[in-house]
Image (tube, rainbow, N blue to C red):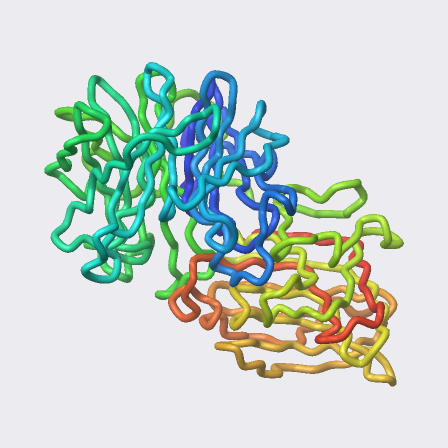
Length: 517
């Protein structure tokens, strides 16, 4: 059986993995999107299914006012004696915290915040053979940073009864390279009498890398692998099809095989729209050190796995949402908290209703935006809406979003004489009107947003079929290279009162996402 990388495409960064029995589970960063920390399940490392979100309640995930690349950083998932643990950082509210559950699909507990003792980011948990739990994370050096990115990896015991750190906080690593920058994302393991630490280094861009260290004692001293970095693509150049490789977590399959999940990017002509995605690599052990993709030394497009079955990642994706249930599918996202303020599944005649509230995609409030991750270089999203405008500033339609300052909007609005559709590109915070047309049948409007590499087009359905409204739209401003940050693009349904709230809304009866071959 083979699986095509990435195993989980689209904006699913900072993967962490664990195995319980014969099943594997991953979690991923979500930053300012809600719900937070998606959890996936697989029986073979090839076919993955999202079974929920760890942080699906406002009380677990305060995000009000935070930027799109703030919020939830780098979760870790672990399992011990029947209890599931997820630890992460909300850098916009409370810092490092743990939630627990009796089953991976939840419900998950309210957060146990670890307080100022747990400084820094990227926390992980390790359960030793005697049941003792240890916290490992990254923080600035207490003595003071000598340069930007001068950090350390540290370990401290965690009391599971009180969910608090106890004993001494011991710094164990400061990075492999001379003047190492951003040693982060550490995970701790035990194998054959050694404790191993895997961590990222070099920042999460093109200099990203994976380092390994080991010690006979959990608190060190640790020695670095002489072959470090054990994986990186930085030496392959900016034009290599996959870059930014790092932030790894190890897992064994219970049958002697080891694997690594990690993040990487797939730029298109030097520009990345989908953000950091989740990849898989094989790991073998030589002289007590992990070797990634032995004989290859880089990520492979296809990974051969034990067993038989259908090849994963071969069939084109097509998903349709009719919004006829009581809850939203777990893969649908909103911005920040308080989903009930911006949408309703009960109020719509059919489908989902988005309210035209004051917030817009250009601010850090709770905009009415219901989205999916862009998971393919060439894809399209089709939506059908019935708007009810209450004022001239009301609008509703579809959008492709990177962040508050870089996105694409196709908005319907009333101008007193009828309904107009305008296409707006927001690049570096400045709106540019690309096209405006009259909507001939405003009672039910069908829009299509198509992405083809670094270009997009917007189409409107009429009696003659689909007609283009704006074509050849440059999407490079929505790339990570131009906009910065840590998120990838999402595409979804949108409504706004643009600063006012007079009761307008739009009912969306359907949403379809298609991969284009």
